[in-house]
Image (cartoon, rainbow, N blue to C red; front, side):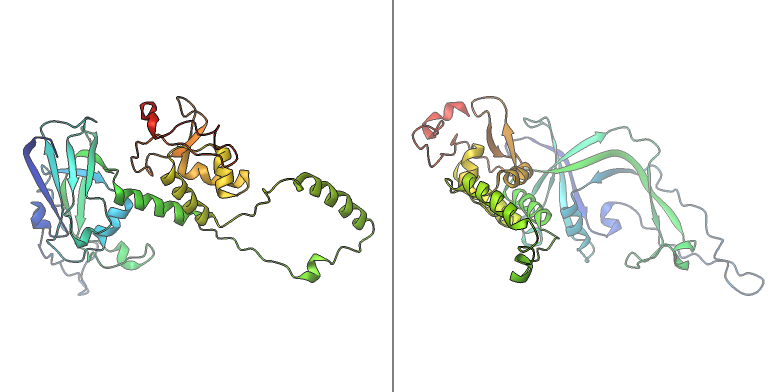
Length: 321
């Protein structure tokens, strides 16, 4: 990776507490018997604070990574490694989370930046309860209010966040998020011919239809831009293909390329692209950084009606990038 590796290399394991160098409290508490012979659930042992001096890092990971780790049912499986480098990278970061490149991590980013956002965490601790981790408790159930043995696992020393490295796998995850968010939950009902013509014989409506109909024909008679909205996810897919072909697009070029209404096109563009307001590509659209594949060719879109005048940037003008 071109960086000097320090002596600190920590492995992350699943569920096996001993593999995390944290002692598991396996003490079985026998509660004293009450006078009527029943066990006293309201009385439990004191809080076990033997691990008070154990330092723990509180790390927030992306949802897709947390979901993948929760699916891991086996204990003692290595989830990843925390590697600390002696020399920070160009972004000033020197801590990385690394995943194994195997089938268990298929379609997942393999490298993450670990950012320490709070080095002096105060009064934050991690506790464990003697409950079955697979048992689902409802807040209103009696089991949720039952006292159980509680132990202090450690004191939170650092608070961190994990940021995926921008690679092909992470870009695909971001694209899938946009697709899922763009799925429409509304339905369109097309009325039959009887509904369409039912009001044509209302008093005065025929003349109004003729007036506005003739005006609309006058406005659209000399244009080919009579467009109909396509499904949002199909438009997103089309726009991604457009930006793979050209890195920069004018809005007019995208309108002619997609043949979609301007308002609808702007709405979808705001999800995946940015409008450059400065520099040589001012007033042109490009993909957001999280979707960009790192293409350095400064290629702009070409208006089909202005082939000789609108091709501002070409492959031979990479000095603008």
